[in-house]
Length: 276
Figure 1 (cartoon, one colour):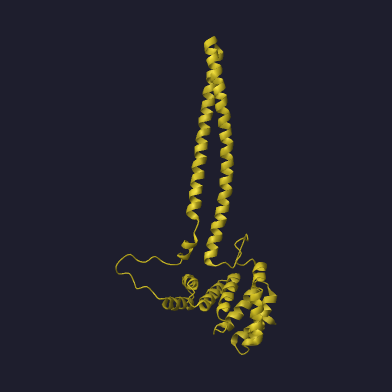
Figure 2: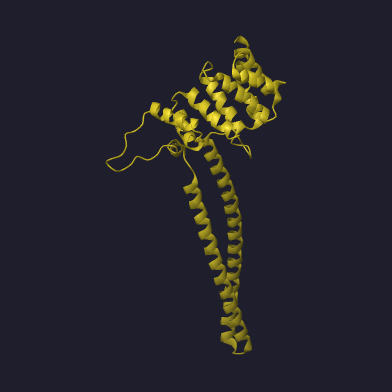
């Protein structure tokens, strides 16, 4: 048991280095993994906003270019109109018709440019509205997994946290992972039996082959309580998760800790196969 505790202490002391090497939990990475459900939503929002900001920058540059063209044309129309007035006072010949035709053409092109500017402005406004509407605040994140209460008078009684945990475990045992996962997330965010809820979140991630996510949840579970009855399974699945990620060093640490602390367990027998 002493060896096991030393291994866990070393592992969590070096947690920052391991997260860095795998990119788990880093919202600044281009392709992060090991994020919680809330962090995944934040990352997707940040990525969407970066794309929209680039589009807005391109549209703004295009708008500035068109405005410059329109200003140049307005100046040209003014000069041509002035010239036309001078000709009107001097004579009446074919030059007058040419100037009139030039002015009409310039007005037509200018009108088209104004329409293009208005179209770009509408698109910019729409994109800005989309950014404001798509960003999820921290307060909104807290309520993502909480269902709205029924408005009718016959709404069902609100389940206690204990009952929700029982329901989630029952769904998990039936392998209804998609239904069980958000309930465990809600309970974990409320810090209700966090060692247990994070363990089950790790198990669901493990069975769905999201090994990096599983490791993060297992770490959280051990951090809350390292003597739970599910520790042999947690150590085994953590070791196998590292094995799937081709991290033999950490695989060895966890499987050896399992063999040292729970040598007679069924999980220890499985661990030996991965160490041979």
